[in-house]
Image 1 (tube, helix red, strand yellow):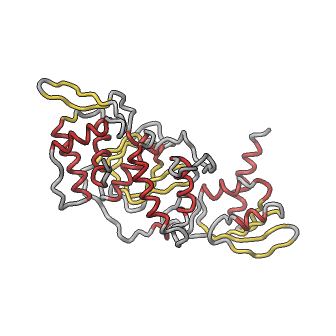
Image 2 (cartoon, one colour):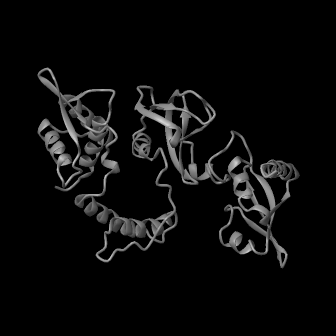
Image 3 (spheres, one colour):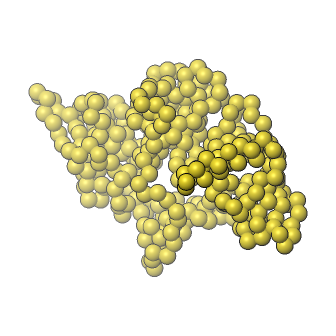
Length: 336
């Protein structure tokens, strides 16, 4: 049984229903949810019938699918469906044979784009996929890519991606590090970005004009909202992130030219892996490497520069130099 695009959407929709403890999903409810998911992708689709839905459930329960631990709970003459273990999800299960075949097909398509501008990430992705899922006959454990396997929030990636794709407003329960309480946010999602092994969701919160970003590991719950989705066709996220390191950016904030000096020992690393795309060489000698970057001043920039310790020196501007000095003095106090 091949997993078609519509079938995969149905499986994802059913998976969300089966692990939702806040609602009982009867067969008619499941059919409605599946058809809503399909028509969001293809408005001209007539959806599926109950027979197809029962086939989908049977497939998901089978070893060819994901062997889902599904319970049929009686409620009078009706019954609703729910996972025995609500922490279960098909997205957290090992890849099955049919998914492996689908992944191989997808990789064949991706290989066509290798070497093209904007697709450099494919050079890293394809070997990792091949090695992780043993898709080649002679695939071994020969490549590792840095990742945090204990990172929270990655379970939200799929529903958030779909919400952005289908322009769905969300009601997000969120608790920031700065708050002791949770809050509910009506959110219009636009973009997902990974930085320093964390994921962030960018969009607009309520009627607030400026962009907001939410850390996925601080999201407690996501449900669809009936609030009209607010589009913003003027946003270009390649341009938005062009002047920053990380994800933090205040409204109307302008880039600042920063002059830095790296020791001779650090210089080769800075030249082969620039701190930012704006990096320019000012001079180079046996004493080190003088260069500049032009970026927006933010917390992530400060953390990056501090990570180089004594091997990098801030030359200009004086105000930024003084701020970093204060942080180093505070750091030094921790060792007293």
